Amino acid sequence: MAEFFDISTWQELDFFNTGGTRNKAVFENPDTGELYYFKTSLKKEGRDYKHEFWSEILASEIGRELGFNTLRYDIAYHKDVQGKEEIGCLSKSMIDTSRYKLSEGVNYLLAYNPNYNPKDEKNLYTFNFIENALGKSLLKDKMHYVVKTIIFDSLIGNGDRHQENWGFIVPSFQHENKDVKIFIESLMSIFTPIYDSGSSLGRELTDERVDMLLRDSKMLEAYINRSDCKIRWEDKKISHFDLLKRIKENVIYKEIIETEIKRIEKAFNRNSVENVVDSIDKKLPSNLKQHKLPENRKRLIKFFVSLRYERLVKVLT
Image (tube, rainbow, N blue to C red; front, side, top):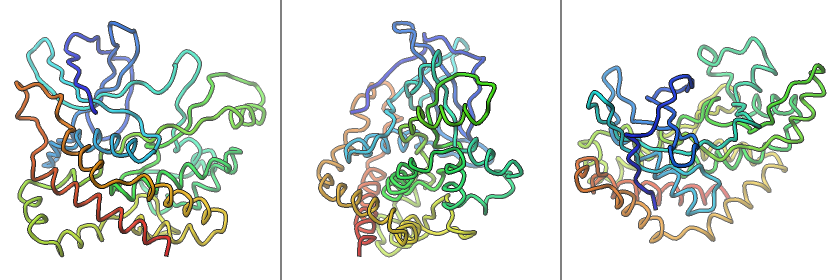
């Protein structure tokens, strides 16, 4: 169950640079000296996804319930010296910065193709491109983690698994020989826990849209059908489920996909998943109850995950 942290007295570390579209900050826990990342929901350019931080927390909790290696996210509240209040999600840094560093996926794509522009050439961000890039860095044997991440995204409807939302934890060291450095890193690289999954579970839906989808099952089905994966197949943007079917045509990945989906079938318990959703905001203090996840949105998320699970299982047929 997600815990609640008031980080108003924690020290914010301004010198850390964090990427992405949402407001992020790094704080140091005064009791342990450990670093934590605090993220709020996206609010800009006429878009106010006020429940997005809940999607991040829920994705993490549902993932762990089903046996995925997801990064833990908790609830956090922050009030600065000017009295500005924020609520969001909190995650402990996944690396020991004195010995390791995070190498995001984009680093491997650029090492494979230095001319690749992630912002202007989105149609090049394909499964095959990722596979070739990791192969050049001697990490092709880690592709099964990418496939498992796509499977997880198919369950939660995450449409934003971009190049900075996956990567490897690698040792921090320098070596004058580039090939030797790549070889050593490949031996010691660890695929990260699944993180930054907040663009999921209908986080962009307005309250009015949520009510409409709850009333109309065909509309909900159409909404699920429009959910595409960020990672493309060749130059086409397709659904997570269609992408998995294409990947499954390769005998190596076929075994990985079938094994993982069968594992999920054994782990999936509708009541347990629904309990995760229902209890996600239990630890939120009563004075912050205005930030609770609305009951109608919880209902929709439970339908959403259940329907996407059923769709995922059909990938096996």
